[in-house]
Amino acid sequence: NAAIREAQRLVPPVPIFFRNSSAFEEVELGGYALPPDTLCLVNSWGLHRDPVHWDHPQHFRPGRWLEPGFREANRYGSDWFLPYGRGGRACSGAKLAVFSITSELASLLLRARVRITNPFAQEERLFGSVLALNGLRAHIGASS
Image (cartoon, rainbow, N blue to C red):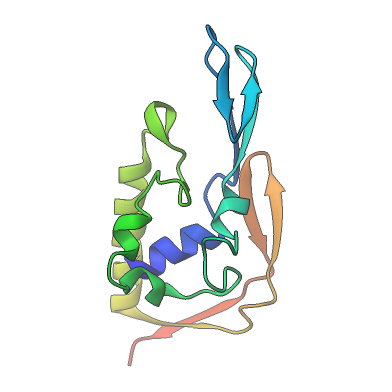
């Protein structure tokens, strides 16, 4: 679970999404007054890598999720961890996605040995609103 959360922190399923402020009244966000129905861009990729909140944000460190209180402070949809969005407009399939990822990863690891040849060779690119990785190579062999 820690590895899945850390992977979603570094490569969120939806790294950028849009929301509108209240359609009926001015609201304040970060000290700024937003007129009614203002389109806002939410950069979860940037939030997930912000050194103000994350220690060594560019590193894959699943152990951070095992530190006392860390997982509770950074639950799905929290201020700093929102790979599926937040609130009433968050992804309705988030729980199914996490369940599916967990099941597939467990199934793969039970049957195979996975070795990443060069974890830093990948290149991130934005495809629509989904982040894709290019260049990540893995070898999958029989489990030992």
